[in-house]
Length: 82
Image: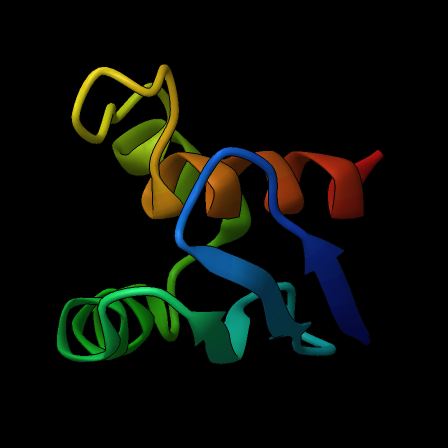
């Protein structure tokens, strides 16, 4: 299943991602933000379960904003699972 999450409080504007039929994270694309870093995050989470990615990414802060692109992805995954 494919999802599109509109981010809040980050440089990236949205996150497009896939949860595969076997319950793993597939392709992830961050629109906007720090391209190299976000490509790295996308590559690292590919093949993880959403729960594992959430546990690793949730709560990461960027420059005192109270959130970050990884944290926003964790929020997107939580929403997708609900």
